Length: 257
Image 1 (cartoon, rainbow, N blue to C red):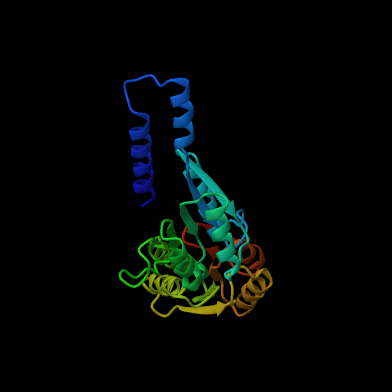
Image 2: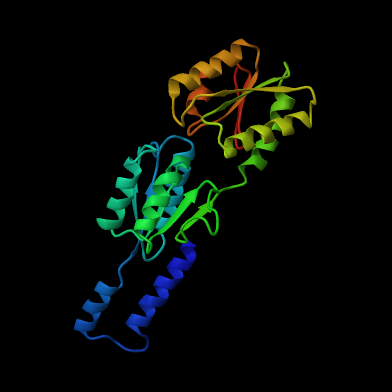
């Protein structure tokens, strides 16, 4: 969708500038004013350097910012409350954003759905796969990666690495994406060892370092020797699961010595 918007913007600029002629100074000044950049806003629920979900989106935003004719505006640490509605309005009204990426799961309903109705000319793209065609506003869209496939592979690696047959999964909230990852991780592990078990602890939110650390150490104390997680940042779990043999995720495997 972003590519389509960029293509439309580029066509509009070309049509206004014309081709094959050298503009007069007045025309050049007018064209410069007309060729405004496409302003794209990114909103994060946590810090942009969390080694996880928010950082991944921020790195994507940095890539978008390199595109010709695009200006990126960002705001981090925006909670999943009416605060995100204020942020979206400010980006639209003050920064001139016509495309918004409010990235956190809890932004969607009711916040994105509400603001999308207020600003039908703005495109809202949400990471979560919650959009329902014919039900939600047409200027709203969803995207999400097939991260459960990576989790299946991580489960295979976890089962091969475990000596106790006990795995741990620390999740933020029991939403569909997290549950899908837990199931995929466990199915991957059971393709190696059908008797292996996965213990799950939900912390209640995306970034609760104390609860994440408590969950990791509690699992290690129970003989769980491979731990993974689905929270915004894996850093706390990785650093505090000191008694476990491994921390495993869809993309990394770190051995504890």
